[in-house]
Length: 551
Image (tube, rainbow, N blue to C red):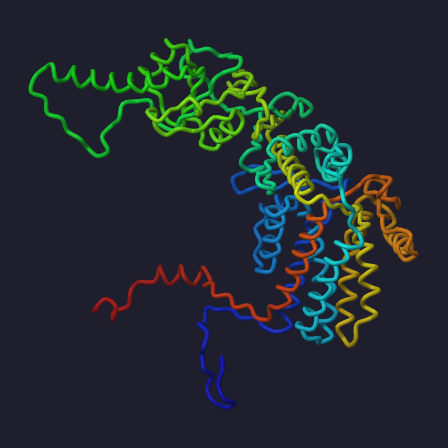
């Protein structure tokens, strides 16, 4: 409502809209950010607790992955929703560090609260935050990170292990790390000096309930949940010639409704013969190239199955497009759209074995023992569906970490050591700043300490004593690599303990956390235009007025 003093107020916004503005909104946003961070806080570190979430359909999710938890939670407050969004961004961008990014963003907001209460303008705080972020990135790149040799498998395993160590599958960490590294090495492709590692498309995780997690493995090829189409076809072929199709092996049906008029009896049998001849022609074009196995994305008619079986060819139909692409990468075949375009070079010969196996109560088709496959399937076994889902989420994190190291082989120490080192460097720089901006700048340095603090809280150590000792270690200048052992809460040198994290994950965490805090501090007005449900329903239920009836 607006208008000159003393006159009747002018209504600008509709009566159903609710408007909050000024300090109230900023402080509410800070509270919302802190509340979301508090939900996730116990999920950080090796002593992390699991959260059990029920979805509206009655299914359950048990996890300590920040992104998976926040995906299941329904949040009312708009600032809370943007906090959930950053966990998703982190997961899509680098795949790990979803929990720490939420905890850090919550803390960045929490430390800004005192400045808002002291009536400091948000833009001053934002300027200091942005300056601090630039300095953080410089410090990480130049002072704290170390290079890594990507051929040193033991060191790579150590890095992936520090990611898996905080997860549910930490008991089988050696196995999980081995699987992650093998899968990433398999799908890595170098083309004109550009390295491409596409985990999403070419490293498929196949979950089969039964057995134990220790039975999981990486196949040097591809596995598809299909059986051969005809029971008499061969189920095991060594050194198969594989053909991949994307067409129907059936007679063509009319595009639209077609009607045929027949004048004599022979015409009908002739039409049937034509259909047979068409299928036979397609099959003979295939048989000419002498393949052993055919995979097609579409259907195969009974007649085509008969011809192929007589030629000793095994056929698998209705394969997913993504699976067909993986088979093509694994055995070196080319997917062909029409049978009359088939050539010898389209056949894949790099696979060593084609076999159909029964695992659990389903049949699976395996194309394995490939020479230099560029696609792979990770076979996950586990006691129940929930265990498998959590193992898959953890494995995805491990795969992303392995991929990040391969693409950018730089590491920073884990266990809160890097946060303390950056925090100390920022404190030093804050002394050089002039004016009010140095206080929010210093607050960012303090906010970084939330990671080591939470680590020590989660394993039940004396937080104040541990943090004071850790600050002292870093202040003397000898301990850039000193952090907290998440298992016991003791101070340890991360070089000796071997806890390392990829630099890309850390950079993304800091950027996302600070940018989100800046974004939420910028908001000074929330206008919610949602109608109250009760009003809308009562209005709908009210009978129409007389004027309306007349019209």
